[in-house]
Image (cartoon, rainbow, N blue to C red; front, side):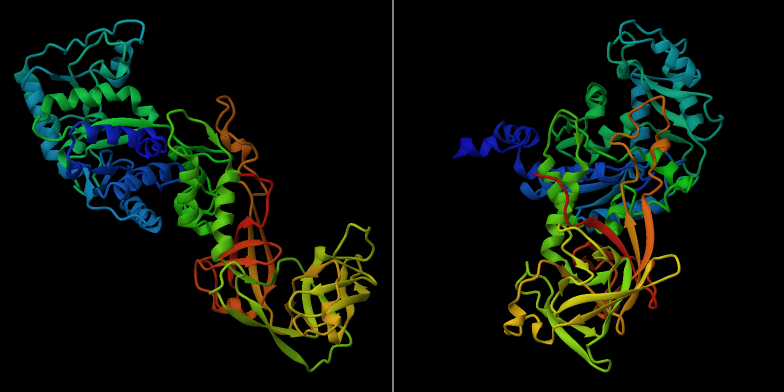
Amino acid sequence: MEEEEKKVLNFIEQIIEDDLENGLDPAKLRFRFPPEPNGYLHIGHTKAICINFGLGEKYNAPVNLRFDDTNPTKEEQEFVDSIKADIEWLGFRYDQELYTSDYFQQLYDWAVELIKQGKAYVDEQSSEEITAQRKNPFEPGVDSPFRNRPAEESLSLFEKMKNGEFEESAMSLRAKIDMASPNMNMRDPVMYRIIKTPHHRTGDHWKIYPMYDWAHGESDYIEQISHSLCSLEFENHRPLYEWFLEQIADRNRVIPKQREFARMNVSYMVTSKRKLQRLVQEKITKGWDDPRMPTISGLRRKGYTPAAIRNFIERVGVAKRENLIDIQLLEFCVREDLNKIATRVMAVVNPVKLIIENYPEDKEEWLETENNPEDENAGTRKVPFSREIYIEREDFKEEADKKFFRLRLDGEVRLKAAYIIKAVRVDKHANGEIKTIYATYDEDSKSGSGTEASLRKVKGTLHWVSAKHALPIEIRTYEKLFTTEQPDAEKDVDFVNFVNPQSLRVTNGYAEPSLKDATLEDHFQFQRIGYYIKDRDSTPECPVFNRTVTLKDGYKP
């Protein structure tokens, strides 16, 4: 049995199990999710979120939310707030809300100690000169002319850097490691640079800011993180992570262990924050939460659910090798969840009027229909029916072949939960477009009435909306934002060239009156059309509904 359990562990869980078997106290397990607040979280971040918080749930261990706020030129409180909202919406709860800026003084003090020990120095070269001297992995780097400057001199300059006595880019603090290392990250990496932009939390107090590689591992150590999990791009940073820890860590405390997993790339999406920011700045999309964006807030606004996203991450799994995940798997997971929870309603997105000539003009009925056949506790509701209704324009043809099972002249269909009707004639506009369809109905064919006529089989069933009771709605139909699977794969082609000009189509239609009471982010299945969610742009006069996904696609799990 134990052997079977081990087989289902992913490689990160196996690492943790091995550490526990080798003496790690389970009470000392602690994880963290460390985003930089320089943009909105996207679908790629959900993997790291689910891995870290999922491990917290599995091992009953705390998980910190730590903001890596070490670059004030790019970070804003808006992004902090959005990240917190996204994590909570996904259903996760963090133990502590922390910031790397909480540790600025401690990081500075440790840096001073490294200078005193001859393990760090102030370099007055430009970033371009430093990069050139590092050479390449196959050629030893060239020492900085300041590499062996006296510790006292570096200490004095470092303090002046902190006090803002030098201009930006005038100098930096570098760790003194190994300029011949085949790992470029070990060739005297920069630890601090001068930035005089006010910080969103600390204001003007600091004029120098720690680099990620220096701040990250030390922050993990301060928080006593047991396992620091990050994406594969940081794998070759691990030796530097460990070197920095060796300089400051007390071996009697938990020493964080960095391990890497494959990033998640989803087809037809870009997840570079820089590129997402460009989509917003150039108004290609209408903000970070545009439903076409791969941001969590965009997916949420489009109608994706936390359960669907978490199920998607679980299906993708935790791997060491990067690959491209088919967006259809994500949509499958969304569709699967919405099928369980979405209320079924009738709405017509491309309406044409149909008049039932033999139905009494002054008559109306309220027909009972199920809210969700997949949920026995969902109950039923009443839908109004009258002489004039709207149906989908695509559901009628004057003439059609035998494969067309919807309404045609002299043909019959059933109106869902109502009657069998027969089209008899049409009125047209001057341009030939159909203005009105006229039909007759079989009074004895009412669904559920138990009459012989109600049991009569016809091949087509159409949804409809009573014109007298119809609620005008705006429908936003979203398609993929890009026309190619990997829009940023070609280095010589600007990814915006692949933006889909038809990614948003706005139309007006009608819905049954029950949708007047819908609240924001309520999920619905517009029967025979797709899944929709009420959008925040709605007004009392005209609710707005975003299409989440179509009812079906060709994906096979």
